[in-house]
Length: 492
Ligand code: NAD
Image 1 (cartoon, rainbow, N blue to C red):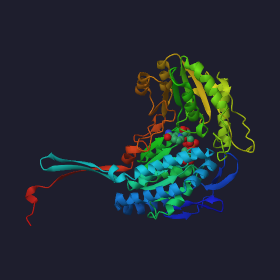
Image 2: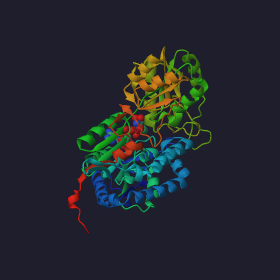
Image 3: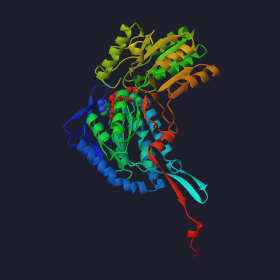
Image 4: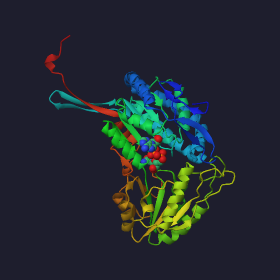
C-alpha cells in the first residue's frame, strides 16, 4: 500500500507507515520516472514484526493444515482476478515486458497451487513393531517464524517460491522484498489483507541491508530464504548460520549452453535468443555463454547475430516490444563497462547494444542485445555474471572440450545442450556440474513441484526452494518411539 508517495509496511495485520529516516526510490526503468519512496526499515521495526509473528505462531501452528490451505485457495482466486493489474505493476517497476510479467506471475501462482497440497505433502511416516510392541513415527512440525529476502528480477514469482509453503506448513512468514521492486508484492499483500488471515502470520517489511542484517541477527527468526547475487547469498548464509538459523541462499549464475552440429539450428537460435535476451538477460537462468562445437560455429553464429540485431527493444507495455530496459541506470553503466572489458580482453562485438536510444524513452536504462564473439574461457568476462542482454560465444572442437568449459566455471545454476543425439544428451546430463539441466531447452526453470536446484557458487545451503525440499525446509522432523505394554491395558 502506498500513502503520500511512500510504501507502507504490513505489520500484525495492519498497514503501518515506517518511521524510517532513510529511503530509496523505485524508478520506472523505461521512463526514469520516480514511482514511490521505499522506507529502509530499522532494527526496531524488524523487532516489532518478529514479536507479532511470535505471538501469532502458536495459534497458527494449531490451525489444521486443511484450514490453513483454504487461505491459499482464496489467494489463488484473487491473484487470477487481479492478474493483469499485478503484471502491469511488475512491468513498470522492473522493466520486463507485459508478457514476461504475466509469465512470472503464472509461475508464482503455480507455487500457491502446489502448496495447497500441504495436508498430504506434510505427512510423516511410521513403522509398527520396530521392536516387539514398540512403534516409531515421524511427524513434521512447523519451524516457527521464518523470513525471505528476495531480488529485483522477479518481483512477484520469487517471494511466491517461499511464502505459500511457509504458511501452509504452519510457520509465520516475513518478507523483505527487493527495495528496487517492492510494489508488486505490496499490491499482493493488499490481496492477502482481504483473506482474513490471523494478524502476524504474514508480514511485509521494506528495507535494505540494515533491515536484512536485523532479520539475520534476530533470535526470534528460525529460518532464512534468500535469492540474489552470490556474494550477498554467501554473506547471508554465513551470518544466518552463525546465528543458528536454517538457511537456503540462491545466488548468481553464468549459464552456458552447448550447441552441437546436429541441433536444429533455427529452433536452437530462437530458443537461445529468448533465453539470452528475455527479461533483458536479467534471469538467473539466462543463457549467457553459447559454446558451439565443430561446424555448429558456422551455422549458429550468423543466425544468433541476426536474432540479436532484430529484437525489438522498448517500454514493456508497448505493443510488439520483445525486450525492455535493464533495472537501472547504474546497471546499464555496469553492463556497458563489462562489454568494453570483454572487447579489451580480445572478444569481437558481432552486435553491440551499447548507447541504445529508444525514441520517446530517452531517460530509460536501455541496452540492445549484444553478441561478443571468440570470448576466451580464461578471460575475466567469461567468469563474470553480466546480468544483462549479452551473449558470449565460445567455440570448441569436441563435446568433451565444451563440457570442460561448462565445468570450469564457478557457478552451477544451469547448463543446457542442443542436439538431436540421445547419447550426447545423456553424456551431458551425466557430466555437467550444474543443478538445472536443459536438453533442447534454454531456460530450464523447474516447475513448482521440483526443487530449484542451483549448485556450486549458485547456491549456499542444502534444501532448495520449491518442491519437496520446501516441505523439508519449513518443517522440523520429530520422531516418537512409543511402547504401550499390554499389561497396562485396563479392562473396562
Ligand atoms: P542482490 O544480491 O543485490 O539483492 C538481493 C537482496 O539482498 C535484496 O533484497 C537486497 O536488499 C539485499 N541485499 C543487497 N545487498 C545486501 C547486503 N550487502 N547485505 C544484506 N542484504 C543485501 O541481488 P539483485 O541485484 O537484487 O538480484 C540479481 C541477482 O540475483 C543476480 O545475481 C541473479 O543471478 C540472482 N538471482 C538468482 C536466482 C536463483 O534462483 N539462483 C534467481 C533470481 C536472481
